[in-house]
Image 1: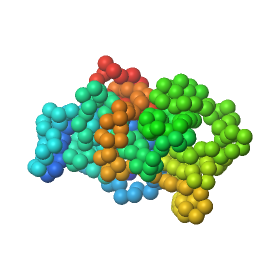
Image 2: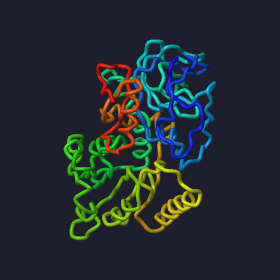
Image 3: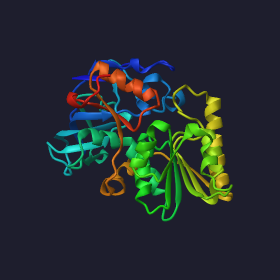
Image 4: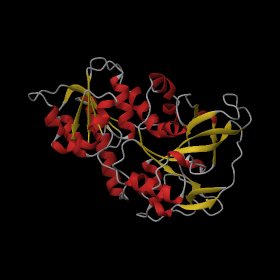
Length: 356
């Protein structure tokens, strides 16, 4: 079968053009696995970073070494139809519509006609969801669940989401607006203000109009209980400290570096980043506001039904591209622009796709 993957470890600072169309075997599910015919996959920044050799700051982090015989097929967010089931699988049957997350260590991601993974990495696709909706949830949904589980009771809390129009931010805006909060404020670009309002924000601020911390502050009082940072950067932390009360909570998904992974990070810089994170987290426990770094894991992914689907929360889709050379090229360029509103999806349904 024809799949999109890597056949060698890319040089640091390469581009998504390191991907190549490869011949890959059609996977057969092992014990506790299912295989599916892929209908859609969605891009994550890690897909681009792995192709560019800059994932995790340029450190392989246990990723399998690709070769022509064993290519590394990426595409962590996936949806499709169950094609075969392995021994011991009782949750799904052949023909079921599912969506899931496949981590790159397996080599068999969603940028292929068929993929395969353990059954606990999939959920049934809701009846009113398209395959594109399912693929768009993936890692963004898991990360949103990881964030929500540490927040506790949000009743009457005043909340800010920085990067509110992105894939994770748009999910969190919806979730917070349905959690009895007193106010949800979104921070995004002017082009996305109306969209963020439409998904539940009470107020939206264009970050280009000035320091958003000053714009939200009321008479210098620190009246915000929660700030969720979906973009990273020390400037975000600076603005947050203008607003958070002493019992407040700053949750970051990225840490002090904006767009971490866009470039190779030196060992010295990585040490500096992690020292900053550890120091902030430890000292915030002694003297508030609280500082937390979070990220999505498989257990968080397994919470999606209760925390998101049952609450009628979907991921926002930016654009849908065709599963073709031109379509994939356009999808990666859109991802690397950092201007996408929600998820970028690659679909086998050409009628729904943007060419490139």
